[in-house]
Amino acid sequence: MPSRVLPALPGLLLAAAGGAAAVLVHARVPLLGATLVAVVAGLAVGAAGLPGASLRPGLRVASRQVLRVGVALLGLQLALDDVTALGWPVLAVAAGVVGLGILGTLALARLLGVDREQALLVACGFSICGAAAVAAVDGVRRSRDEDVAAAVSLVVVFGSAAMLGLPAAALLLGLDPVGAGAWAGASVHEVGQVVVAGGLLGGAALQVAVVVKLARVLLLAPVLAVVSWRTRATGPGTRPPLVPAFVVAFAVLAAARSASVVPPVALEAASVVQSAALATAMFALGCSVDVRVLRRTARPLLGLAAGATALVTLVGLPAAYLV
Image (cartoon, rainbow, N blue to C red; front, side, top):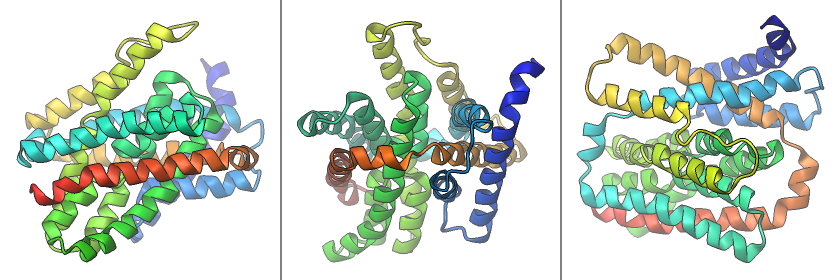
């Protein structure tokens, strides 16, 4: 066991330090999500060429195993009563954003000539919950590091544009804060970005935006189960489990939260661990970005990211008129 742990230790420590720094920045500036800060910091470290060969094993562990811990604990944020209180029309829109977003993005990728693996990462990231969904799909598919890093980078760029642009668009459309918040929750990529957009909209927008977003997050488990099943059916070599363990944990923890069997102190502690785990994983993913790879694939991927953002924004708009 020590022979496995020691090679990974330097990279794990770097990722943990980057994740901790991102969490501290978020604590000081709540509008800056910890995962967003972590990805940007990781990108800066990666662009500077700092991660050497001795750090890569630990960064890989952080971007995969640690990420799975964060995704599993994300289930404790989901109270099904809050989600179902939105009403079935809004839930149908949230499901439509995920389903149509993924299928539409994959169809657009074929037109643009984007690799299917890259397209799947972008489709799930933009349609469900941003970087966490990208990395969760990678946990099932074992995608190339550069594809995962590129998809995460696009989530940061286009999700940030959406979180700033959507409040302005809501104002132009004359939407009330609650309706605008529902639109933001149904359309913006990252949970942290949704929080920023809801805060900019003011009033009751923030709470509605977060709950609608969590309705999309709830669909992460079934989507990953389908992706895993497809991987087993078509992928060569060792097959992943039909439903990965961290997806099962996600569903179990969501059920436990909804049944109110988890003490508040445990929920608070789990929230801290979940934020730290996701920030650590996102920092590690950012470090793996190869700028040269992004340059070679920029045009088709940028087109796909722009199209996916427009698609989920349009499909999510009816939520503004249904709350």
